Image (cartoon, rainbow, N blue to C red; front, side, top):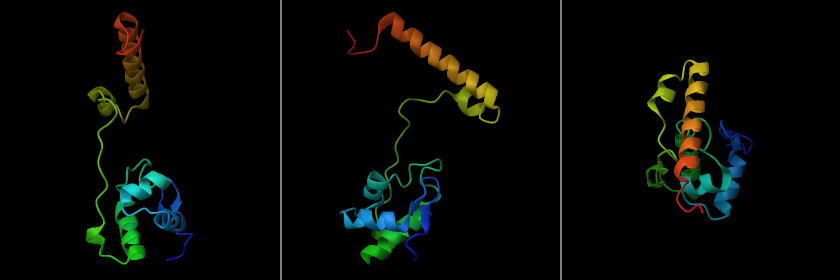
Length: 117
């Protein structure tokens, strides 16, 4: 494979960058992700997981099934269903996000966040 081949389209990560991460000690998709941001784009590794895992296996001369799957993580905080439902209507989604931010700011003003003085 040519080293200029882009394996992660969202973050524009090339085979060369993944190869460099492997040379620096990366052994899994998560290791490569930490070093390159591969899989952190809009698709969240839904598109690049398979080709990157195959490339890791090829570079390490192992079978692709032995490359561990990337860890899945929940969002930092829950996403209101209204935001997800309003995804197609950007103005409605923006309003839902603004309302949530105002509500979050209001709860900070009332009781403060844990650990604040």
